[in-house]
Length: 115
Image (cartoon, rainbow, N blue to C red):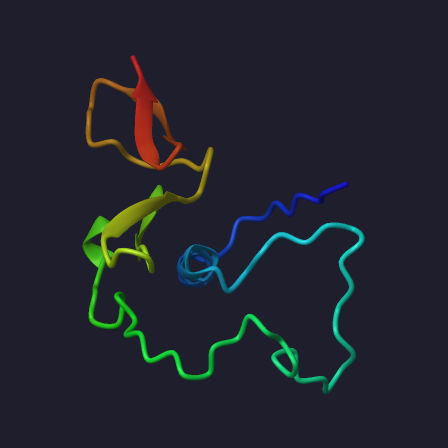
C-alpha cells in the first residue's frame, strides 16, 4: 500500500523538492521497503554503484527560473538538461491577468479564471 503526502511547501522548498524528484534522488517506497541502519554506507557492496562514473550533470549550468510562476516551478530535467514546468500551488488563488475573469486559481500549473 502506498502513501500520499500532501502539503503546500514554500516556493523554495517546492523548487528543491521538484529538482530532487526529477533527479531521481527521491523515490517512492513501498511498505515492505526497509531503511538502512543509521551510520550504514548505503553504497557499500551495492553492485549498481559505478564509482568511476564521470558523467557531467546536464543541469549544472541551466537556469529555468524564467518558467517559475505562482502556479508552476521552472526546473531542469536531469536526463536532458531541458527546462520544464512542475505544477505548484494547486488550487491556490492567483491572478491570470484577465480583468474579465474571477476566482482565478492554479490548475495543473496554470493560473485560470472563470467568466
